[in-house]
Length: 318
Image 1 (spheres, rainbow, N blue to C red):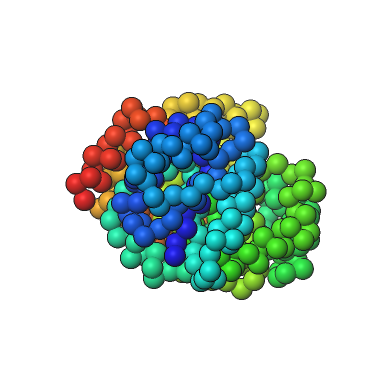
Image 2 (cartoon, rainbow, N blue to C red):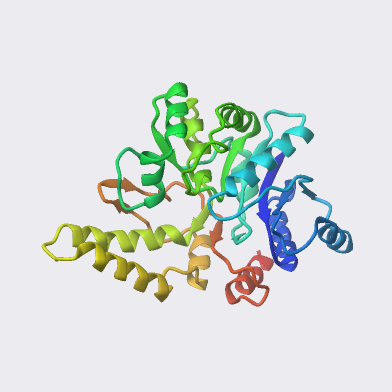
């Protein structure tokens, strides 16, 4: 069985849309929703909607934790514990999704059936432009100490959306997180879900079968931004940090990196633009030539969103 962990907090109509989207491409999967404590709706309301829509491949985690940017990992951990309580097969797999991603390409079900673990191996050993990794390296001492107990202590980051792990591996990782209270005793604030699962999996000797299958616009933004940063840092320009800050703000507001119809088409045709990230001395290619991309992120949680409607249109024809 494949379980799909999705934290949700708003827009029930979009949640239903995402369920239909996931079900189309992973028809035999079971979707596990974690409803945030801050959600704009109740679990009862959501269940009522599912009954009306005759949705029967979704379970709602009875436990809710506080969720916000930087603490999403706690919702996924809660979902994994819930999945473990209902799963009878330790070879079952858990996929992590976000509430603002969508699948766009056929063949995902077969791709998943031939894989056990999907995560990036983004090695990070020195500070660079990616601030979350700098926090992990320089502030998350508890995490690093436990990593050294288990393996080499090497940080191995991964995008969370579209990553997949066998549940027995996740159980082993979560036992370490709980035993050493890595989250509870931790004041380091950053997206830990992009570090803990993949780093501990690597420390435990697991080699991923492939990379996560969701294309994230964030990597395209970082590639363009950090190329500019690198040129600035290797120049004689004064006030480098001030200049980089203004460029970051300008590029972010320009929205050049946003998912477009052409992006969706390129994923469907497997002709997506190669992304190579030079992070102040660290190199990373998030989507190697032989990887399988089947989804995109970020899609607005709005049923009137142009790209959401385009994806629904093209996938309904597949």
